[in-house]
Image 1 (cartoon, rainbow, N blue to C red):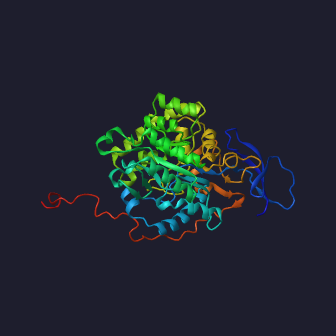
Image 2 (cartoon, rainbow, N blue to C red):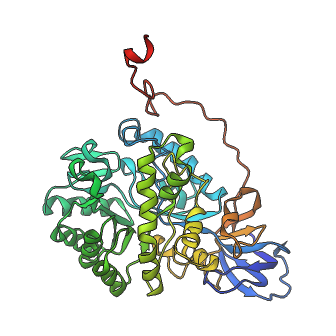
Image 3 (tube, rainbow, N blue to C red):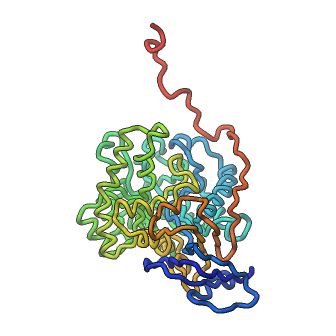
Length: 437
């Protein structure tokens, strides 16, 4: 790998400080220097005059093995393990071309995450840095999939556990396979309480059992939490990161602030459904539910941020509403528009803070000496408007460990795969009265 010198860039270093003009030297996959750099014989030089140089984006909530299903039915019953792995290997390249140089897939179908991560790390395929979980741990309450989840066994991304012995056994099995994280679906939906939103599906003792079993083996735990009790109990149990963290009350907020547990709100899915759901036939009531989730939680999350709680950016890419490569920037936009962060603060959430999801704090996410050279060279000023990070034509170069990524989309046109998508008979029920006068 050749050494690289990028000159005359406007540098956003990922710390939140104002951009500054300077140079950056890459040597042996890492950043060797940042600032005003003299002549470097034998080094490839790129003149970045008029361009912004910043850390690559880190997506802390991305489902790379799902392949953009429109429904839980499609995800759980229309996927095959081998084909899912092949398609995921292609989809990670979409992340790279969007400027994403690292991501966390906390739960994946068929336990595919470890193999995909290892294929990337060993150079079998090209992709961003990846941290991964295995199956998400669920109780039979069913997470957000309700009655599609069986009472025992596995389905889709889920492993159902019913007691502490099963919890410990599954945690140990996943650690043995090589996961970076254990994910727990702490809240779930039940039909008779749907209007109340998600309820806590685990006891505090069960959550402690997960955390103790994982921590004893050196693995972190992340929880899906969408109500106040689940957030409070997850913090007490010792969780290392919380996804969503919405609908916090004051006691939950106090617990989060005291423990400084990183939060990944992942509002991109909700924002897309609320703003654009009519374009894809989404239910109007559901659109309003997700719009309210942002509105009801933004102020509390901002208070947590102001008190020193790390916020990370996650897009929940992998669903029909959040396809790979399209929306990884949007969480920054929501942080600015709904939470009131500055663009530079939001960029820090998507870079330096995102390193926590990879277990690489101090190694990626900043343009600083000694960090890996995971870089995004961009035409425009994201410090003025983070939305421009979604304009693919502005991305001039992406580097992972100093290695330049080919940004040209060489994917062949994709044709329908037999049995891969859910096949609906119709969009409505054919009533005789509606067609016969």
